[in-house]
Length: 165
Image 1: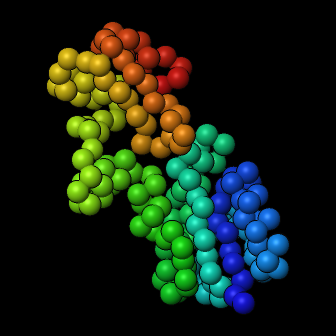
Image 2: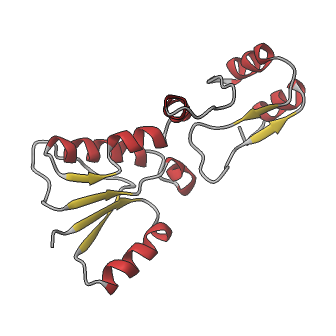
């Protein structure tokens, strides 16, 4: 049985995996991707690689976890390792626009969406969107973290000027 490598940065999410792997006596190893090095010129070990990286890693102090995971996944795929939830899955995980585009291609309707970066751009996009209410949704959040509903531009501006933005 090939070794299973679990790529992640949140111990809480792998507890059920550990339990299942141990109950079945499956060989596994965790790669905690909060920091590290990708030796692209070296071959990765043989095995099956399961990506559990999350866009919300920054909420646990792992700001660059997705970027490191992308490098690791690229390395694994370049060496033709078997990867579950590879670079395409991570790309969808960290991009709301990519998620919506994939949903639309599959025939699933998504709400009208505008991407904006920076206070002034967000307010300009809201004004262009028309009368509220508006929902701000961060590109990387997780479990609804950071999703905000605004009924006025003044309330949105106050939020964007505050410490939570």
